[in-house]
Image (cartoon, rainbow, N blue to C red; front, side):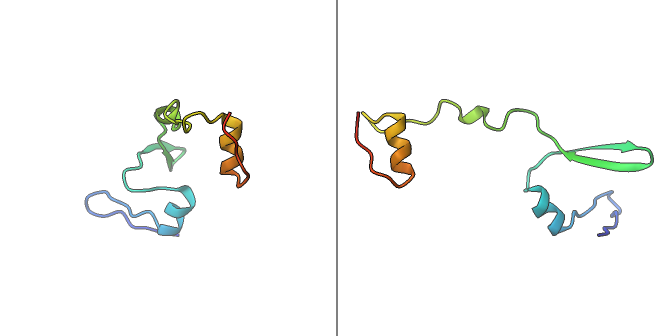
Length: 79
């Protein structure tokens, strides 16, 4: 796939490539020149799960095992 550089130095990343790489509006990319090639990669500045750790709450009186059983379609009993 090809894309032209605009007068402002902008390039449109083809939709198929964006979809394949999971690029969404606001995704940060890092660029570098290497052996005459332009290399671009998604910038990952932190652990993507870090902000969610410890945020989940179980329903009152329910154990982790009971909640997982319920979430998987089984019957759960409160412990």
